[in-house]
Length: 421
Image (cartoon, rainbow, N blue to C red; front, side, top):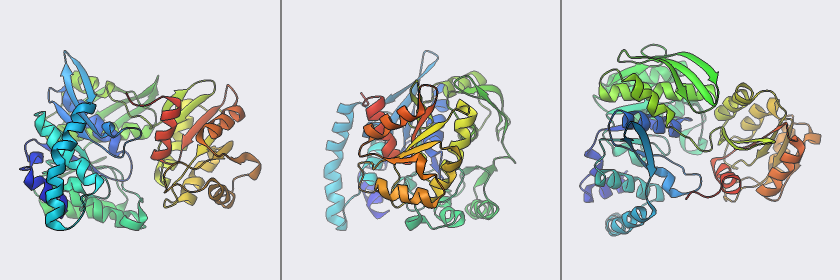
């Protein structure tokens, strides 16, 4: 925290020049952040959104949404703006490193870039996704007028611990004194910690299922149709969310609640509907091919994998599914594989280009331990080979699912969609 605080201090704290929403949790943070930003933009607030990690381009981390003649427009940072921002910040980075004798990290630099860019663009609100944990995350120097806790499970075990409660102890650190806090329904011990933290901080806590709720969640053509009741008394019937999976309905519910709390009132229905319609979330149950249907999803921990299988059936039916899997070696590989096994007709393992990616052969061995039929498994030396094998196995009426890591999904988008412009 000392490095990002020193850097922000040299910049005269641009992150304090606009109200902020900060989001922490295990899964759903990026999509929830984008939904909050789009809803606020639809209500006339130019809103900056900072998320991580990116899939293909660093530009994905920085976006600004605004209202363009009744339509919500969301733009990534321009490449020239990004380059100028880095050039401007590097002397300050050198000063901090010289004073503290420590290197400013990549994430700290990108966070400072978001602080500065949003201030330069005079945003009316900033939405920040915590990168890792919460209390000691670089984003946690924002005022955090509203904090949002998505469902807390287990991830990054080496840093955050092996239980939801251990993870939560770090994540509740985003709850600021006197601020407002939105929380998804949590495990009982995590829920108690959230309640205790809010009480200690004097924060106003709104909990899903108690103070706001998802009333209806149905599959619709190309997404979900939901009805939500917000903590400020708003009720929003038959909103369309253009994303697949019931977990996206929960993300939208949290986003509506956060927007209500930031504005301190019920939302305008038409603006809320327009904001949600404008949301996209690449790499999250995203269709990138047909005949066979090819879907990519960044499920990289057991909780995400547990949500993925049912969401595939719910959204796309019971066609046989050929999985293309690359998983980081430091993740809960056994937990991910166990969650996906009931849904996999066939699986092809490959090793993504990240040094953290587990070898394909090691994944195959883990799959055998998890109960996969050896006759349904294969390994490939490249993503292109893996996708080709999975497509052949699936046939035109089947389904291919590329998943297991966000890094791997980024490579899949490069291959199957093309680079970010």
